[in-house]
Structures are given as C-alpha cells and as structure tokens.
Image (cartoon, rainbow, N blue to C red):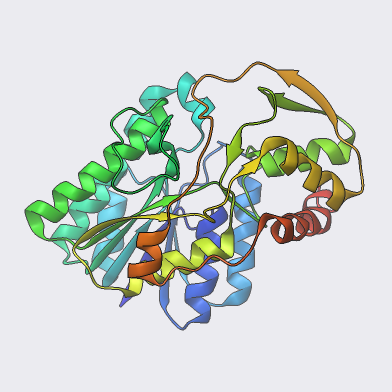
Amino acid sequence: MAILVTGGAGFIGSHLMERLIRDGREALCLDDFNDYYTPALKRRNIECVRRVGAFRLYEGDIRDRDLCARIFQENRVEVVVHLAARAGVRVSLEQPSLYQDVNCTGTTNLLELSRLHGVKKFVFGASSSVYGNNTKVPFSEEDRVDEPISPYAASKRAGELLCYTYHHLYKLPVACLRFFTVYGPRQRPDMAIHKFTRIIAAGGEVPMFGDGTMKRDYTFYTDILQGVLAAIEKDFGFEIFNLGESNTVELRYLISLIEKALGLKAKIKQLPTQPGDVEITYADISKSQRLLGYKPCVPIEEGIPVFVKWYRENMIRNA
C-alpha cells in the first residue's frame, strides 16, 4: 500500500520522499510546483528524489478534487502525509483569501477522499504559528490556540479543526504535527536562515526586524523527519504533537552562527517589528517524547554549518 505525500517536491516533503523510498515504501508525490518561490528549486528537489528510487509524481493542486480523486482511485493509499500548503506568515497578510482557499479547501478535499477510500492514517503538517503570541512558555499542546495573529496561522488552526472533525465523525486516525521553524538543506529561500545566508554571502544588508532579541525554536529537518515517520507508524485516534528542538535561539545569535559558518561579517539593517510575527516560539516536546519516542539531536550550532555547506555547494554553484 502507498503513502501519499502532498507537497512532496518541497523542502520537508522531498526529504520525506527520499526516506520512504529508501525504507522500501511505495511513495506518491502530489505537488503543484507553484510560484511562491522559484519552481526550478522544487524541480531540482524532485530530481534528487528520482536518484534515490522510483515513485509516482502527480503534478497538480490539492484543490483539484478530480485530480486528487484519481490518485486515490489509481493507488491503494494507506497513509496521507499532508504537507502541501500556502506557507509564510507575511505573505498571508497580503493574500488572505488564497491562504484560506488552499489550506482549508485543499485539506478538506484530502480528508474527504481519505474517508471515502479507507485511509488508515492522516498526518497533517501543522505549524507552531497557531500558538500566536502565547505568553506561557514552552508551548504545550494543551495551551489555548484560539488567537492566531496571521491568516496563515488561522488557516493552519482551521486545518487542525477539520482534522478533528473527520476523526470525530468518521474515526479517521489523525496526527497533527506542529512544526517549529524547520531548517536545513533545501529550505525555502524566503525563510530566515536561507535568506540571511544568501544576503551575507552576497555582501548585502541583512534585514533585522526588531532589536534582535526575537527567539525561535529552530528544528533541523532530520529531527522533523524522525517525528513524521514515528507519527506514520504509531497507532492512536487523534493527537496533536509539537515537533521542535525545545530550545530557543535569539535572532542575533542565529546571525552570528551564519557569519561564523560563512567566514563573513553581516551588515545589519535595523527595521521595525513586522505585523504577524510572534516574539517567541518554544516547543514543549514532552508529549512527543512520550508517545512518539521523539528525540531531537541536532543543535543549532551543528545544523547551521550543514546548511551553509549545502548552500555553497548547490545554491551558489547553480545560481
């Protein structure tokens, strides 16, 4: 039986596809190669997956009900790992309707087809953004999350609620995974680590929003994969899990690590705090440790040099 990965040409999705293929699983990829960032980067990701082994690629939109139905009709889909989404907090402020349409309508399509075709597990790529400006740290799955501060965060919380509805009504087993700022090779170019590395390497000015004390729980992609794979294999009805490092890193310190890895000094451009940005993300991973056996093992001091090495070998060389 097959595992369908939506957004399988993206950052996390392409790494997951590779892992599934190496593990001997039948992997299906659905991706629309949209222009949120350069589609050529996703094409490059897919070529990396192809070098690992065979898989089926469906190119199209998760809102396309006919296409999605065809995938389920042509394959015995056992598990859906739903990573496809319109991502990015700041862009969602400019295109809120698009974010609602893709992230909610698309998720509903996949949940309904999963119900109709007897899927055994639905794994939803949620986000730490649902916690908003939570003042209680670290963030626990038991915390209230009814005050999102961006359309992106609201759409991700709506996705969680849709997942719960399908579990409640139809007993669909669901795991919602709240990712905390994932980074590593193939990271989206709009995300801070990739963006800062690119700017510092080119000698430009790094935009620092706020005073540099903003904190994030940065999570290396291999630790995220560990959690996703455990969620696929473990049995439960409906659960929400935090997947993070459970460690906070100040923006100023992050920039210093990138400087060190590049061997270059950053030029900083101080800017006001952006609307929609939260002050801190910090994962309580005790539940994930207990139920998933989750154990992150790549600290930021080790992960940043790995990313910078990948950037130099791939992004600069292929620019």
